[in-house]
Image (cartoon, rainbow, N blue to C red; front, side, top):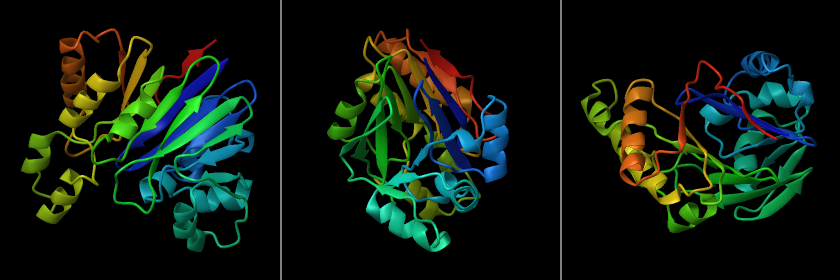
Length: 260
């Protein structure tokens, strides 16, 4: 059996839990240790059950819980060298780093994990594909655009977490963000808009994909309704409306996906 739960996703925090018969891991730890423990507790699990944490990159909305989690639970952290070097000053006594080369593949229990580089304004950001006998799960968040490599890597997913960060009109009309911040978000090393996510979805969704999670939504410049309408409309136009779309939010977990 495989169970997958997005514990929360948005500009203020990101964390997901993946459990198989042999392996229990987190992808990112962008909430406090207390919040992660509470959300795992709702699943009947605890941080003490987690065998590994895989990091996409070092930004705080993906790593803010790490210093406390690392100190209390000493869970091995899997990331590339540049990400580890960036985080090390926050937890200098932590030693259970498990470094991988971006673009490489490692095995953990009954999972095979492939990382791949994505364009984002971090030291060495990556996406992931988690391969399992029951199906593959892809993580594609925090990227300014999808390269050909990215598209090819996630096409084999049965379920995919895809960034849909902002609605272009809402971002342009936002009066709280300085123009420089808007330029960063819109750049090729920023974040995918709903329209960009819709184009990526149209390219990567195959007959084998069943579930598409719209992740990392901005609370100010997007909404689940905006993201769903844009991505769902594009998929319907391409004859791909069979894919189940899932909303995500930073303040709640999604319904657990179960394969058996």
